[in-house]
Image (cartoon, rainbow, N blue to C red):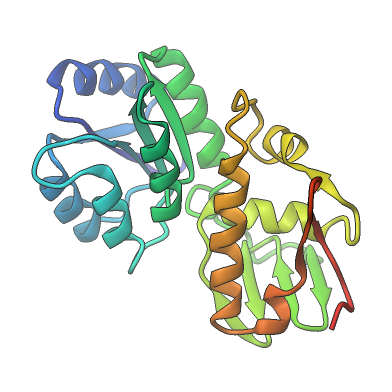
Length: 238
């Protein structure tokens, strides 16, 4: 690898941290550990990690609180680790800014695959070369997506999105006026099935609209709900 890829593993169970650390280090990643939310937040604010594996339920400060505070200043990709009985908390985690989640008990190999996937799609992992002859731009009257730089601007103002929010917007914008149901978006954007947890899509759409609306109401309105079906990216709906 051209640079060290650093992953922060946060869990109050030492055996889980050690297991994940072992598997991730086999892939060449540099792994650091935190045993509670307070320690994790301090470390994540101090250093720019490429990805954070964050346990949802922890003493002192839980994963939702950590993600919420971290999202005030950083867009570091977050994969939430949750127990099976915490479905409502998982949705709360997405609303706080998590990009993905993995249900315990999990396969360490699955965790590695998820980390690889999110790193591939993260601008932090894939710095863009300035030598490219042409840029991959998606341009609309109120919204521009520079896919080379993973940069979104609405009415000329840059919008900070998490990797998953960016992927969702880019996927919809590449097919204007085409309606996608939630199942299709889960498959294409998340690249695996959530077994009926369709609120994942709804939560990300909500956050995406809120962020766009802060700088451009017109851009936010481009993401349209098709009731009973799903969502589409609509141009010229003003």
